[in-house]
Length: 364
Image 1: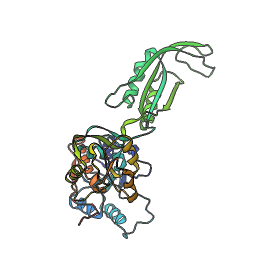
Image 2: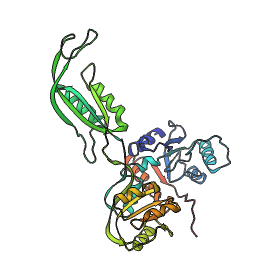
Image 3: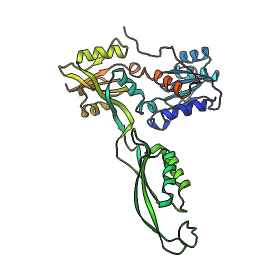
Image 4: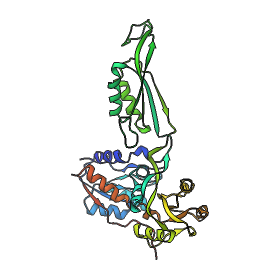
């Protein structure tokens, strides 16, 4: 097996395309064609984690956070980033990062937070806009099923928990080919009427190249008539954060105590407590202050995230309990998430959970 095989397996779960524009995901260090027999899974790739990979004979590190986030201008052993990269290169160890690609899938980072609290009726907190497209094309009646099946095979027609979704209208198409044309139906120079179906099918935006390739390969016409539009529909399978309902109502004090237990932290920064009960909870791993207003608009009673600043807590306004559980704490379950996925996806590939604690924040 080579590193590229593992990268493709991860990408089928958390596509690199799903990552935010500011992010740096995918294979950051190493040759995709190098052989790999074992991978170490970690939240962060520090020099100590690279040492652990060396000691455990791992040729690949699968990390949640990218060790190289901004462009490196120099590669000298003067900072923790460069030291980790230099050591990985020296020992021929690849480094792959998922970060916001894993954040933006329904069963990713934020679902793992929701699962810790046993939240029910979970939905994406901030759905990704402009991520669904619709293809409309016109096909001779006898060729409709062939084209439809090709589009399904390319990943079109998936809506939430349903697949192979499409809609067809019957009609009549007209065309007249010039002297350079080579029509499949009718004759050049003559107007032709053909019984056609209008086929409508949606697909995830990142699948567009494959979907259009399938359309052109399967469609019988020399010139394929088609339209593509970006939909405003909310994509509940892609986006960041999660919101759901607790199994039972809790006081704000009891909810904070629950957070300490579930997220293994002795300390939580939070907004002023009120007598409001906690039923509906929003979660967002990592820095989540940008989603406070969204959580309030969806009537969350509490918003669990990290990296809140002083003025962020004022946005609570007595309506919403804001709980900052810590950056590491909010994303700590991504290791197990990736481990479980790869064990199921590639059961004969060795994966190891890193034992190195990479949390840079300590509590006294």
